[in-house]
Image (cartoon, rainbow, N blue to C red; front, side, top):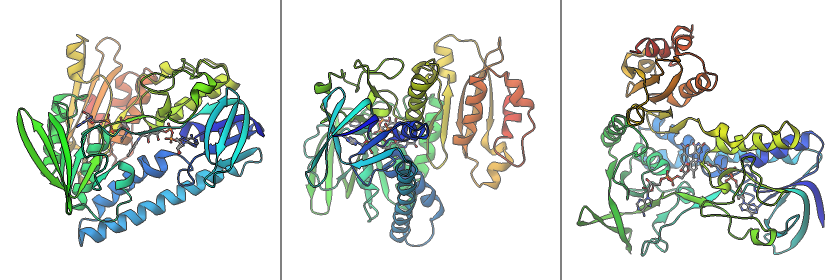
Length: 451
Ligand SMILES: Cc1cc2nc3c(=O)[nH]c(=O)nc-3n(C[C@H](O)[C@H](O)[C@H](O)COP(=O)(O)OP(=O)(O)OC[C@H]3O[C@@H](n4cnc5c(N)ncnc54)[C@H](O)[C@@H]3O)c2cc1C
Ligand SMILES: NC(=O)c1ccc[n+]([C@@H]2O[C@H](COP(=O)([O-])OP(=O)(O)OC[C@H]3O[C@@H](n4cnc5c(N)ncnc54)[C@H](O)[C@@H]3O)[C@@H](O)[C@H]2O)c1
């Protein structure tokens, strides 16, 4: 039996950060991670970091042989993830009170786990507190022929494919679908996105969705809404995907099919029933402090069925740490207002209300909008696509929301988020002295445009 005060299942964002913080206080920690390719978790190994590395390479390498550019990008991506995996492992494993185990954990009782290693050997682990941070896994819809198709990939396996797809069909036009469409179209694949929904970017205002769709179409990405996939049939060298759309039956061939239809909480095989931990259709049930119904067990990150973002998992760590060593005041409610970013050639970053939502909810607002092309730095960066729009309250002058479709939007949105959280009137951002030439200085003009 190996015992520790704190036992973590899964080396995700919340776990590694909380484990580091508790170990720095001298507490004993056992970190159990199922795969030695996943130290540091999903984000750095097979999700955020590799996709953004590939996006950057795909934007930089547009000359020369497409297959060579792609292969170089995959090799570079593997270098980046390998470096981060190693530094993430050492950051935790090198602490005096930490033991990292490379095996799969399952509960045997509320304070007891079994770890099974690759060679079949097992260890019994006991923990005073147990933290579950096992992430999520792709949902593979029940479409005849899809699961067994040798051309079907998930986001993870596609990024390991060393041949550039010629014809890439992406099932699902959400975050992963659109980001991969951008990346692979840049590298030179012919990309078609099939989505079951009736709208492109359903969560966003139509003005934005139309602009993004047009821009992606110019890069050769075709988007098919209302696509009900009927079956996937393997042929020599390609799969044929049959779908119905508005009453018509259509077929499309692809040498690679990416399934990007959402992710579900990773709870299978955890033995949660043996610990008495409750789950629902989203994942592990937690209270506002991320505690499960069993007092010594917490769940953090994707596995607890909330929004699936690395920064949410990181904030989960803050909530639990505050409960363990702080005042216990931090709760899930602070995660209600967060930025969302879709990393496309021109990124889309939003926070709070958009104009359509303000109108639909009868919320009084004033808005300001400028075209990206009016920003000198956008010209310097060679990307003048898009627009920036903000909504403010006529009463409090606080910012109600922002839609930024411009180069570096993923950075700009954090300043707006800060202003919203700190209840800073928009005039402060309007009149701030910003460094030049930068994208941030566009806030001078954007907030001056409020009317
Ligand atoms: C392609 C893609 C791109 C993404 N891009 C972004 C982005 O740009 N920005 C963003 O904020 N979010 C992004 N996300 C979402 C983000 O990756 C996840 O929300 C985040 O990684 C979830 O982290 P986590 O802390 O829940 O756990 P994870 O990081 O998923 O860690 C879970 C760990 O648990 C391990 N594990 C599972 N079961 C067991 C077990 N029984 N025993 C031991 N170990 C186990 C797994 O191997 C894994 O290492 C992206 C996701 C994908 C798929
Ligand atoms: N930039 C980021 O922050 C980022 C990037 C990638 C992923 N993520 C996270 O990962 C999660 C998973 O991403 P995702 O893109 O898989 O999920 P998603 O929920 O964003 O999108 C899934 C899409 O698949 C469609 N769909 C579902 N079933 C279908 C079917 N049978 N046929 C056709 N279309 C179907 C849905 O209509 C939806 O548009 C995201 O929700 C997000 O939280 C975040």
